[in-house]
Image (cartoon, rainbow, N blue to C red; front, top):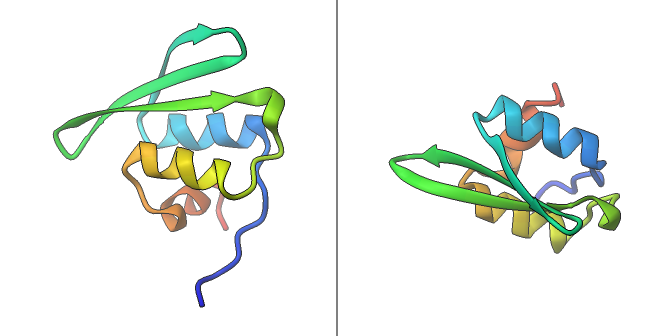
Length: 79
């Protein structure tokens, strides 16, 4: 079985996205959209801060949208 990851706050998710090269794109209601080009493909990650702390499956969805593995996300936090 894989490693269990702790929940993330909205602030941590935004820090991770910036570190991975994402930029804030727009906001629609409580949903923030962050975009970046990853491996030649434009990626859009939707962050809904009122839903924090982010646990699975919401965190899994954001990670999948980013195109990066979850391990890389937590590395950005020094974990």
